[in-house]
Image 1 (cartoon, rainbow, N blue to C red):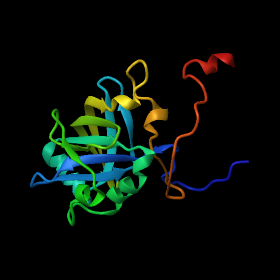
Image 2 (tube, rainbow, N blue to C red; image 1 turned 180 degrees about the horizontal axis):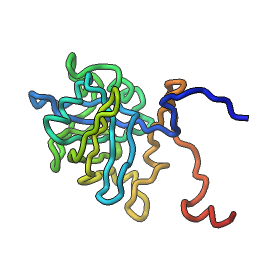
Image 3 (tube, rainbow, N blue to C red; image 1 turned 120 degrees about the vertical axis):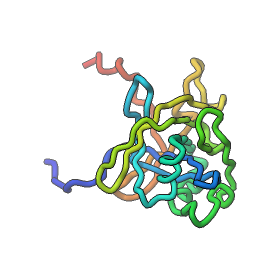
Image 4 (cartoon, rainbow, N blue to C red; image 1 turned 90 degrees about the vertical axis):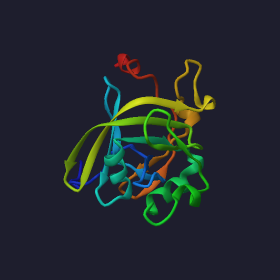
Length: 188
């Protein structure tokens, strides 16, 4: 029997992404987000939700662009740091010993060491309670060759992305494959 636990921000898996922006002075900044996901196929779009109080919020609004750097498990500590510190107070890239790389397509930096990057131009913003949802059109995805499969697509087992569990506020790796989508269901 299921037990009611109330209305909470619990959904699984929740991504752990790092959103890159430039501040008003052109300084690279990044923050960790979990309220995010793919939101449209055509055009390809993602959404990220940020509070107005975050330093990155103003960078997205001002520059009409952001990047999403997808960390591997190897960078869990640095990813968590990007969510703890504020770009108002320090250079997060320098403190984390990571490299800000300027996107060639949008005015936003990404994390050079992370295996997959989405470069996005801002299409829409929608105020939803405490957060503003930013919808970005994916202009390009850049991936390290080492994480691509034989068809040139990013391989989740090679990327080893980080997932976030909002209930216990912990990070997790991704488990084993359960089967091919749009295929294993045919066996029912």
